[in-house]
Image (cartoon, rainbow, N blue to C red):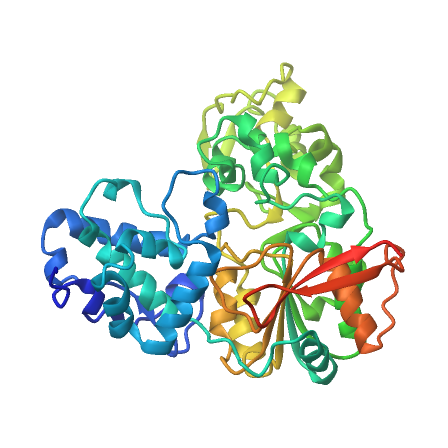
Length: 477
């Protein structure tokens, strides 16, 4: 039997650090996981170089369902749940003794129980090479909130809704899919799966600010597919508005960029658009901001929208210097035309070199609005008495960290099509969001009004092997 006492699995791996530089959560109560570089397993330079890669992987932890088509030896959802439950029950040392030390499971496979995909650079390596990664995964798991055992049933969820007065609602694309707006990550139907034809190394590059600055035509070529085509909102939006009307809504943190929460009537002081929205657009050159309706024609046509103010400024310049640009007071030579700037005459050229209008959505590489951090840390955390997470897989930081940041005694309910494997919610309700919130309102005796709500019966089933996970299915009356 191998000696494990010298491995990182039984070495201290937690260091208290300031998280404010990473995600704005600076209250001294959270811990950031970093492996102990002095561990014997990390003495050589190669493993030390890999340490930062391990930590990066933890930031992108995934559900096992994402790996269905890959030849990986992974833990099933049921096995993962059992391993995580056992870890909390017996503690880290005993858990390691019962699993890896006993030969019951390899460290490589056990990593997948904590949502960690085995990295390609470790393929073919001895199993002990996976210990640092597994140690970090275990530490991350133990830092998460623990399910509150007193909340398990649908009746519990209804009671919480009725008695709570300061509800945080955290929403994602799943609350808009019934309107025909695609989400991002669903297999085959999600927006990212539809962008593979662009030939990008990663479909998310469409929303990368660096790529946008280099060639905005890539974003504009797909903008029409994500641009809200209607002001209609879903029954789930109406449910959030109903919470507001009943003076129960503390804040709706939405990751959506369709601005439908505003159309549903959510008050600006109750709404935090974490990733911005299509409500407005701003010139990347001069900062001129307009309502997004003013560039809708360009967005719908897949044409890069230019700043009208920049165009007017260029056309007011005296003849002979109109093609020169000035940046910070320094006159520069004529800008080289890009492939997406196909204008020919002078006036069209003015348009071609004018600033690009960027919808005010948050791209990868951009900071979230300060209102997100301020509202969460300085206001909501001390008031919240219930959290509803609706229509999101919680895979994008820092929004994905909100659940673990809030007080551990605050009950949390999850509503979406698929389960969230990396966070232990108190009650999971799986199915169409509209169906679930409609049924909750019916059981609460609330009158939820919306033209899309039908009188169908809703079949609710408890998932086998779970005490608090339910599926909701609409059945024709």
